[in-house]
Length: 152
Image (cartoon, rainbow, N blue to C red; front, side):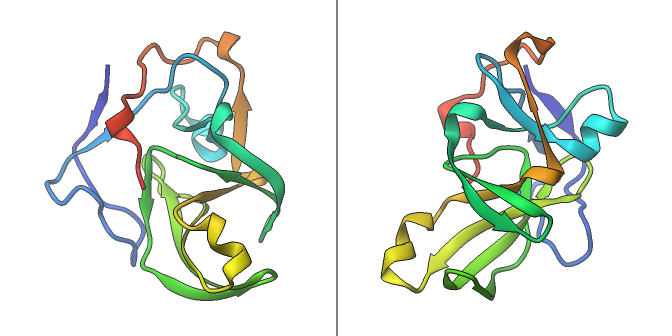
């Protein structure tokens, strides 16, 4: 089942993604997941962000160290698009925030200007220091994510 949130408010400067005043928090069931480290440290219910099976690469760097490239994530809101000069070239990215606690957890690649970086477009970086990996046997949620429920 889904947990209903009554508000779309986040940190100043980032957009609400629902437009209707309600956000739904998804619990991923059926595999190991990455969760928001801030929520995990302070809440009983960890905010699920991605299935481990959606992890594409661990060979990335973020502002806090090692970063993880994912194909799909859930339970995030987006900041405004911004051009950023990264070590692999110029990209348009959007910072992603945890839906529950509004902490920055990484970014989404909107546009890669270098041809050899186009594979990143539409994909997500979660910074390893800002997330935790939870095993399926940790007693995680009991609701499956639906295919149409992915953000992106």
